[in-house]
Image: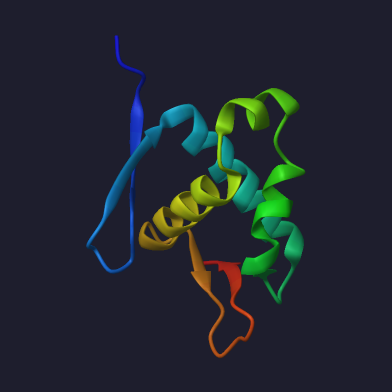
Length: 98
């Protein structure tokens, strides 16, 4: 039986990646927690991978594969779904709750 998968869309609507649902749920929780803890200024995109790594168990990290690729895929889906947004006029890019 195939492992359940969750689609991760991109804001430009040109791509969809289907990742295992357990990975999506673990990363979604880690990203939202990191964004919440970042405060009003938001989480810097360049800090996303480290923020995610500190919120996942050793087992999750060992089974995940590329943290950067998966975290970016889930981040994009959260943007498309309206759960997070990019801070306006921010350099470097920052992520906020929508």
